[in-house]
Length: 368
Ligand SMILES: Cc1cc2nc3c(=O)[nH]c(=O)nc-3n(C[C@H](O)[C@H](O)[C@H](O)COP(=O)(O)OP(=O)(O)OC[C@H]3O[C@@H](n4cnc5c(N)ncnc54)[C@H](O)[C@@H]3O)c2cc1C
Image (cartoon, rainbow, N blue to C red; front, side, top):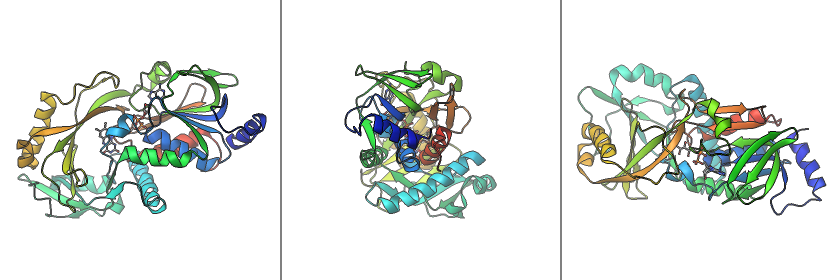
């Protein structure tokens, strides 16, 4: 039975009841971050008759999505990630047209590397990026000796939490949204996937999407997710003083896997660099920024934006799930009725639409 047919059959069995948490749904999406939200949206688009339930143990748009810098860079280091980036780039382009009020803001972009990097950059960046040599950089950024810069088209950044919440609001017509509802157990049975909730309720889903962000070790799915060998890493993005001008460009530092993003609406820059602290617990009390974090960040800033390195640094600190392959993980688990979607290596926003589409493919609901 297709999900759409199952939804109709279920509604008939339930006498058309739409309010309240049903004890049976076609598809449950667990985790209401950007990936869970986009996946629920994609499922409803493909199977409008299906009964869909999106659950989060807190408010939707929390988790990694709340802290995200939300930068979309039109590039990918592997062919698979490039295809996901291309798909997501197009998805966000259409989304801005359909929902003009969403906080997705185009941003000029520069890439800093060396002349030797150019052939790889021309492979990694999508044709839409129109990579072009330039010397036009924000006043705060200087090119170290031997460095070169290129301009990139098609970048944007988003308030990921707000986007998630706005898109979830749209979903409320067609899906049930359960906030502050923790999932305590996920168990495959012959007749479906049983979910036990923190509210004491139990329900059965025909299929389940796990979109847990960095909560890979939640007791409900720890054993199910363990074979994926995904891990959780700290992510640090610093808030750097010096008010950006309205048209300042974001600057990607290729060699360091770091970037500077102007946030004029917040009145500061954001500097994200690659932090190597692994196996972080998203529920452990945050230590915030450490001396080591500031030391690592300042080393990169001194090379590229010395005045910023000298200033006071604060920021946002959280974590994200990493796959170990450099590509997001979207995979059926167990007997195939549970699909994992995430572990996007710090790129869950920019690759989110493609992750959602693949998860929906694996649910095999017909339509695409
Ligand atoms: C500081 C920072 C900067 C970043 N910058 C960028 C960037 O510039 N560009 C980019 O593309 N990506 C960026 N990322 C990465 C990106 O934000 C994440 O990959 C993305 O938000 C992950 O989305 P998600 O939906 O998988 O996870 P989350 O947003 O973490 O959502 C998972 C949800 O699952 C819920 N949950 C957990 N356990 C349970 C349970 N037992 N029951 C019910 N619900 C549960 C949580 O409450 C949470 O809401 C950044 C991340 C951070 C931390």
